[in-house]
Length: 253
Image (cartoon, rainbow, N blue to C red; front, side, top):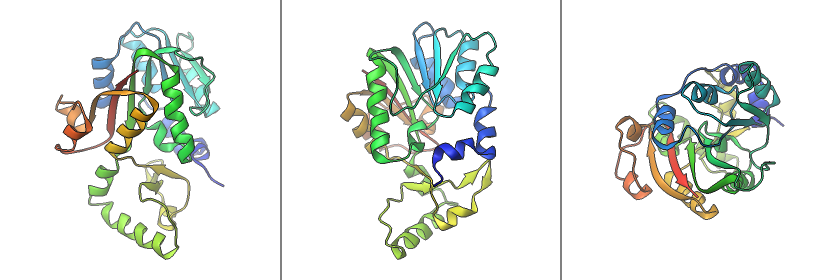
């Protein structure tokens, strides 16, 4: 059965994630405003090392990145011939790092949204909390269901998917969506509701999960709040504002 790991190993998605360059505006904002260049930092789901390579250019030291796709790690290492960054193969749901290993952790490429299975997603949250030092900072990004559901181009598809799953007696939340695009092109198998799925989170849901494993949420926002330099202090505050793009949480332990 096709799963998300195999999707990332496919030519279309592998090239997208292995050879990307530069930081997105949201990533740079969060890194600039919430991280310390001199603290030990790990990035989950580093892919080709795009974010960490930029952070090194920004002056960050003691950087570690992991991914569960070995081919990504090989590409990341090739981009860092001096080996100033440690790149290694790890699974976010069962990390080999000891407790309290890092002062800063980055989950900024929607990694948890693409983990297969509810229990595995929860385990990834728990592992993130376990490896962060007390007082440390965690940055998370998630695919946002509210944004997707309000997008004109996707509204008809969500209606279609709801009807299709009803006819098939498939009790699966609409927050589980098949890959609508692969390698920048429309994925026609999404019309058949084929696995694998990625999970699109609601803000309240993320806050609940983060608090359940022990994190304290200090800032939350979507791309709209980051662009306006107006991150919210709570999901309740965010609920009164417009949402756009991804969903971002800043947490402490």
